[in-house]
Structures are given as structure tokens and as C-alpha cells.
Image 1 (cartoon, rainbow, N blue to C red):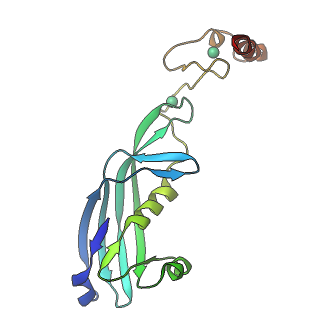
Image 2 (cartoon, rainbow, N blue to C red):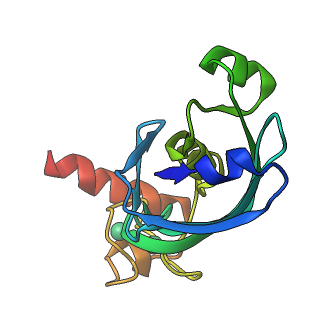
Image 3 (spheres, rainbow, N blue to C red):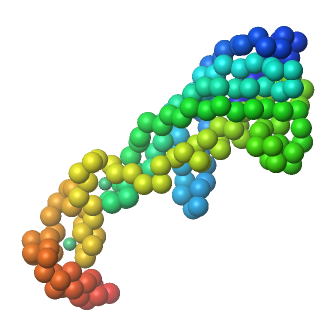
Length: 171
Ligand SMILES: [Zn+2]
Ligand SMILES: [Zn+2]
């Protein structure tokens, strides 16, 4: 994802607007795969302040993830506001200054976009607010059907043990 700033470099202080929409490859986070099911849309205002660029805007997409309770894949809308700075410095310097580096008259937005998604992607989510999850004893998806163990009183600690015994028998 790139933003051409040749014009703005010559006109410090002039605010420009842009909307960029691009498909992005999945990102890996702690063994989890974050899949963007819709193109990432970045809507932004930006200007050159004589030293570097300031970008303010909003990022929108949709993220596919696994339900924390039942493990089903589902899609959730994702949006985050941002305010970032790009300076003509090396990558190491940019890290120290908490900004993004650029060279020439093009800002490469990929790292900024990836950081925003990785830092703000929800770690937990439910496929629906009242997801019943999986039976802890036999693994049946309780949204779809009831299993034999769930007919027992849930407060009875032996119910879970009985389910476990049945699981062991299957081996
Ligand atoms: Zn679920
Ligand atoms: Zn069960």
C-alpha cells in the first residue's frame, strides 16, 4: 500500500485527502492467523510539515477469527483510528522516534497498516453472544446438538468425570 506525496513535499502545510483500498495477505500473531476477508480501506488526511508527514485517518476491514468457545470461524468488522508520523530517517531511527521511515516521494504504508491490525485485533471473540461452546467432556458443539453428558446436572462433578471416562474408553 503506497501513498504518492510528490505534490505535498513541495507544498508544506497543504492538507490532502486519500482513500486507499487494497487486499492484504493474512498476518501471523502468536501462532494465530489473522485473515482479512475484505480489502483494507485506509481513509486519511495528510500533510508535510517541513520535516516529515503527518497522517490522520481511519482503517477499516473485516477480520476472520476462531470463536473462543466453540472454535468456529466467524467474521467481525474491524475499524481503528490512527495518527502517525513519517520521517525521512533510517528504520532504526524511526523505531527510536516511534514513527515510520520514508525515502523519495512515496510513503509505504504496509508496516503501519500491519501494526495497526496486529495491535488492535481482538484476541478473543464469540461467534454469537450466547455461544454455548463445546461440551468440556465430549467436545460436542452444544450450539448444534445436545450430548449425553449435558443431560446430567452440570453442578454434579461426576458428570464431567463420567464424560472423561467415556473418552478414555474410546482410545
Ligand atoms: Zn462459538
Ligand atoms: Zn458431552
